[in-house]
Image (cartoon, rainbow, N blue to C red):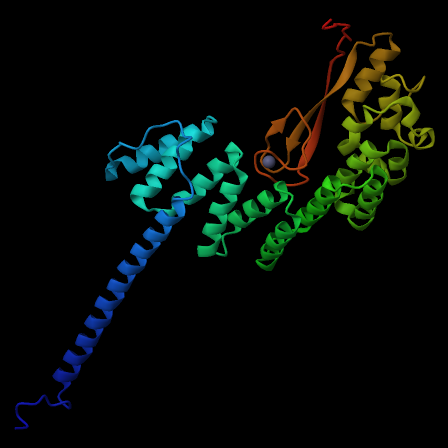
Length: 342
Ligand SMILES: [Zn+2]
């Protein structure tokens, strides 16, 4: 009888048993991964139902999908996005997501919605991505930025804290968020000034960026927070000041301020030379009787190196906060026109 039963002491039987167990575990594991993949695809399709594409410009309803189309359509969607045709790129991303179930395209779709101004849709997608991959730093930055744009400061701060927990340097984001919160709050200009001034005192590193707002709220009071090393970041704001808002005591101690206000006709004389090439040129030409020049400003991002004609707190391209640097050049003074629509 014993001869019909396997002998467990036989090494060949043990090896066969082991191989059998490995085979069963492999099959189960493979089946589980396929089931998991299908579940993810179902979840993705269910999630995408929230994003109807009726408003989109391309008719993809009757377009038959083939695997070989994935890459060219993806590149086309990116090209549309780069050229600002967001509705077409959104349309293509949705089409690709539905047919390929490739969740990596979600990031592109979210960015296209973000660029097109559909902030809530972009946020919903980013939150979906982060729910599957909580350590995605770039997506966390985007979530923080959208919450800030939506004036949801509490959730924006939560996102910053998650970034901080992952070792990111978030001091600038925190200061910017507080500054935005004060700026958008429904309090008087005086209270805004007081609160931003408090922020200036506790954040020396970003003080000149915050003082820009102080000069807009109350130029006379803002001078008490001014330091000569802030001149380069404040030059465009100072260039717009009127005579009643300048501080003669501070000007007398700062050559560049003296030159700037002499060029603008707010003080009568300036014989000094500074390290600022544009100011020296305009001062010298005014002394020679040629007063047709003026300062012109270009705003550069110190991170991505893009430049813009208007000032920014966050770079419109890379979204870095307090990355603005002002490039000063000399241009021709614009003639004041006296046109009337009447
Ligand atoms: Zn930038």
